[in-house]
Length: 461
Image 1: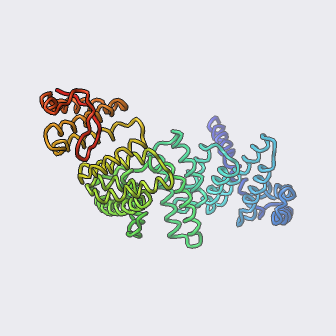
Image 2 (image 1 turned 180 degrees about the vertical axis):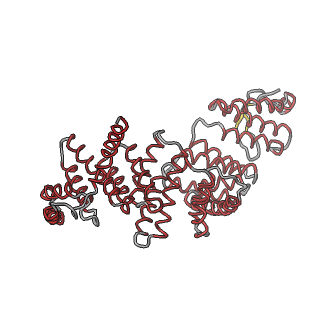
Image 3 (image 1 turned 180 degrees about the horizontal axis):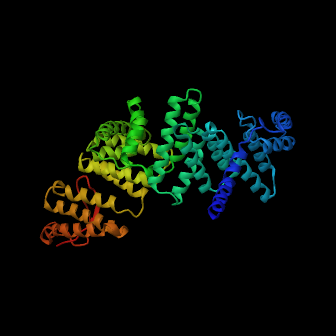
């Protein structure tokens, strides 16, 4: 007897699970209310066609409750019911009601899949879509719905799942709720489904393609963090091979591969590197030529450093003319004149022109000692050829020392160099004997002979 009671209880419990599943897939075919249910179906469907969902609801509810699966051939009671409840959800202002409507809509997605197994993958895909875009369900719930849709559909999963799942994966990874490996797996799985749909679903191929592009645009926000060199090689090499002479493609692919840690020894990277460096060199040359055409002073400095002194002088003159006509930048003018003075003195032995340009440089930049240091060097280097004898040469040395002394008096930056040169050339002061023989006394004002022509006060050693 006890065993019979236990068996009865088991049957009752089992029946409590079976009955609802059976009821939710009931049709009107064997219902005693068949005519009334069919009538309710026809009436609500008329309102659905005109999108009068509130008017449709009463008739839909009667048809759905009496025959959830309609005639067993159409899932309209589930699909139309979702439309009605999502309409209610969008227009409700009471949060409790919105929650109720959302739950009912999601329930109808599940029931469609249970009663019409062939439609399960599609229904679950749309469920995930509405959870993401319409209901704004919590991401973990929507992610679970996406996973269920993919489990049901496999490679035949609807493309509407792509963007919701991709967006959630990106957000969760960025917020440390998903690992890089998990994010990669989502990317890989969705792209496998997309590629299958593109290749095998002629009717929807273009939709799969567009959905794939959209979701991968979302994944682009994290792809640098979740993928390695091999991924980017696979992704980018086809574009490079398709456009082998496109300089922008070459530059982008090479830089991306380097950014993702690809080694220089990698054959593809090595190939790209040669082409990249050739392109960059040509572009730099073009840009530099354009820059020099608009900035002759900069070109002159480059020519000076290359040792092309006569060409540099021509460009410095052009740079000076440009500044005087436009910007009149005193700093630039001072530098240009100083460069010219240096070339004229050290490379071309044009001492008078060099001194004039050095003085002009000093005029444009008051307090700058270098032009006077340069003039001092001119006097010192030409002293041996100045005048008729050693005494005349020593007067040129005095003129040089005067320039060094003045330079350090106005510019502390040259003081050390000036003192060193003053110390060096002080040994070449005129001698007392030579001065006495010429009847000159210390402190006498004298004019330095030759091209120098400076006036100096006689100092003797």
